[in-house]
Structures are given as structure tokens and as C-alpha cells.
Image 1 (cartoon, rainbow over the protein chains, first blue to last red):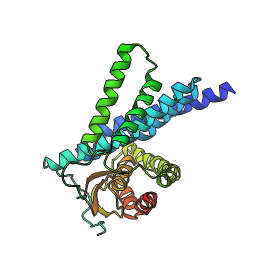
Image 2: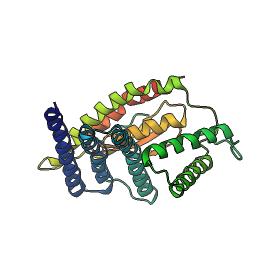
Image 3: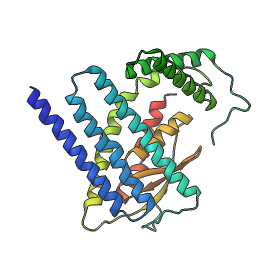
Image 4: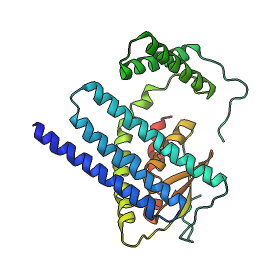
Length: 108
Length: 169
């Protein structure tokens, strides 16, 4: 039983870490400021979620479990808030996002 | 912009007290410290947080409706699935040998009536990798999208409908 939990937990931690690496690669490879903020999204959601899920499976103490869940909740709320604040600050400072497609996909 | 209630918001003392009590309970649960000095620090930080939330005008009116909170788990499950899907999409874009982006800014109408609803909608969009809410007003959200694929997900309005349903009437 505990070995099954161990395998699940390690799978979650390792895949979460892999997504963290992907987020880092994205941060380096993506060409402009606004695109790079998208890479942060991976780190806030799937990698943080998977790593915390893996740690949750390892914890015997319910108090530790509660704390881990709270960490996840706070990361999920503050992450996008910070990303939005970054983008909005850049926009208001006059930085315009470089665009690739000329076609208008807007719906008004 | 949202209607700002003019003048100083009326203070709801019961609400502030409830907030302080909840914060203190959370602090005790998480810290596990019971020496007088630590308790004083805890009480001070809870009071400071309650004061900040009064200053932000979060304590203006009414308790959150339970009917609304009961709808959240279903939305969170759906959102989690969307987040997983777009994570895989953005990971594929980032790891492909040649990065192909169709960066675009789309303006999406939102149908939420409350500021909280718009905040949940905008935050959900940003939480989903590949889309980022840059600006919001009473009518539209301005969303930066990394590729056409994720831009279409925003434009099709599924998330908008679900958040509006979350708001209730």
C-alpha cells in the first residue's frame, strides 16, 4: 500500500519538476515580455500542483496536509494576480505586445 | 468601471469581528505557537490584515451567499481540466524545435454582473497558461494569447458562461 503511494507521489513530484523545467525553458526561449509571462503560468499551475500533490501523498500528519492544500490555494490565487499586475504595469508603461497575426479574432 | 460607492464605506463591525476571529483561528492552526510574545504577534498581524481589508472596502455589505459557494467545486473541477489541457499545449509550443506563435490580443465581452465575478473570470483566464488578462473594464476583458488555439478557447465564451452561472442571479 505504502509503496503504491510512494510510486504515485514520486510520479507526481517528478512530473511537476519536469513541468518546472519546461517553464524555465519557456522563459528563456519565448521572444518577448508578454509571451514569457505565459511560461510562468505553467509554473503556477501544473508544476506547483503536481509537486504539492506528491508531497501531500507523503504526509502522514493531517495538519501538514492542510498546510500543503493552503499553499496550493494561495499559489493559485496569487500567481495569476501577479501575472496580471506585471502585464498591466507593462501595458500602462507603454510596452505594446508584439503580435503575429493580422487577422481580427476579436468578438465585440 | 464598477460603481464605486461614494464617500467612506459604512463599517460593518460584526463582519470585521468575524474576519478577525477567522484569521486568528487560521493563524493558531498554522503556527502552533502559544507563547505570549508569539500570540501577540499573531493578534497584531490578524488585526493589521482586518484593517487592510476594511481599507480596501472589502467589508462593505452582506455575507457571501452559500448558494454561490456550493457551485464552486464543479467549476474548479472544470477549470482544473482546462488548466491541464492548456499546460500541455503551451509545453508543446515551448519544447518544439521551432517556436511557432500566433500572438494576439483579443477583446472578449464578459457577462458577469459583480466585480467578484469579473475577477474570477479574469483570474481563471490568466491561470490557464497561454492566455493572460491584461486589462478589464465593465464590458470587456483584454486578453493576450500565445497561440491561435488558446485564443479561440477564450473567444468561444465557455468560461464566461460558466463563471456567470457561478455568480447566480
